[in-house]
Image (cartoon, rainbow, N blue to C red; front, side, top):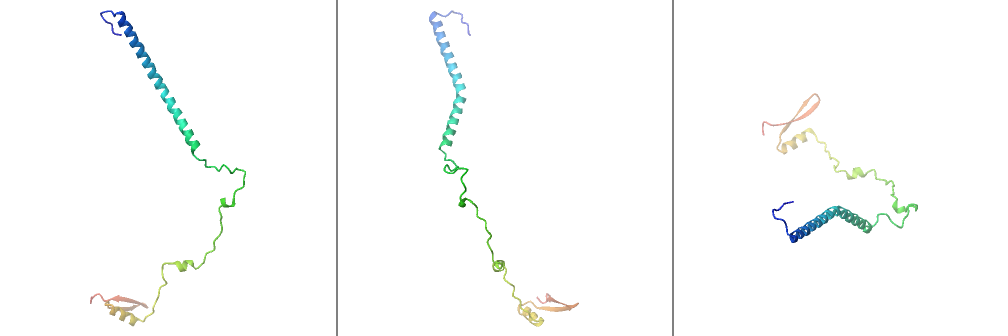
Length: 136
């Protein structure tokens, strides 16, 4: 405390005592508020969660009990479905290839008509088609 050179008058001492009691009262009030805040917050959270759980509908059917038999609609039905063995052939993306057998002369003629002259070479019993790259 600060010491004054002049002594206080009786009114000054009374005033200082009133200020001191008001300061102590304010300090006690702040201390109570600081201690009460966590308690009040916890109570509010607890009450809010209880209200939310009380209002939210239950997931369990209140009419059914655990000893009651299950309905047939609750069961999953499993059965084998027969399939047509020709489904794969009917639904395949690739059409069946169409082949035409032609003689070597017709093959060379059609290649020449297409603008790509070629020749046929026979070696070791195999026939090879060789394009004519010199005249292009």
